[in-house]
Length: 468
Picture (cartoon, rainbow, N blue to C red):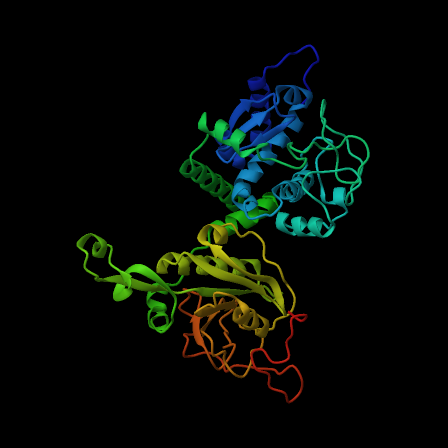
């Protein structure tokens, strides 16, 4: 949207015009656009967002952009909000590198949708990386290239770039000339230069966590409504996974399903439970000078395995993740192990909180199916889990003998009305509310193809660390 050279627009007027441009092109994101709190911030070279949805921008940078470029920058920032960037970045060892990695899929999607981004925007080809990956995948590939978040010339792989007007930052590692600054929209960081800056801006008019959640939910509902009316083909792929995830809720009452199984597990001893122990005296013992037993409880440590083989669709994997979250919520458990497995361990076991599980956006794997490596990984974790919950469609083979260290629940996420029991051992729960689905007692006979003709393999027989 060109502006005549003799027309001088203020900071607020430029953003008002950019909002009008966005409304015409992507009307379904306007709840997030209007949820942003626009603030001039001349200390920064370009613009950035904060956890409280403050969009701080350098007025000189804003004036240097055409209105359509400024609109693309605003949508870029909205995309970070909708993808929950700030909850994802806290799990990264190199937040600055993840800032760059998270920009790539957003910029690729915006470019494909016809948005005009600034010349210093980062794309997958900027770092010679494949197209169509998630930010976490780009982050791992960039780490393998030896890249660091703070760009330094001569390190890693990069291409020449052109920086924003007045920019002092360097380009991607190895690039020549001026490239994207270390902190700037589309060019490596959409977070504040420091936590102190972000907190100060959020304290002066930023959105609360509840308000932000409401805005995101409202936007995704508007995206879904638009997709239902106009067809999903009219909605960019960057939003389709988000609205798909929004529709997925737990289908199982895990508290009742796991009651008998959990009763036989041992776990971390907690105060305030339903049994008594002198090893954990009551707090009143110290005031009354009389040793009295205190209430204790056992907290189970679950180990969630999600089958990420090619036979599992994104919908099935999201449903599996939703059920893992529901287990922690319904049983009041603080943390649980998560491991992604296809024919091998695609993501090493990680002890994750509820917030971390909710922040999962990527599933590594997509190869063949082998149930054994997940159980081997579970045996090696510390603290050792009390219960393994394996989320799978059932298409694969398992060992003849069950693991002795913990109970196992096969959580079947079906694709059709034919459901196979993965093994003769273990409990089975079918993740479905479809009355046509068979119940746990009426499944097809397990099919256990051995790795070699005539050979039966135990849970960890024949697997070494290299194969995992």
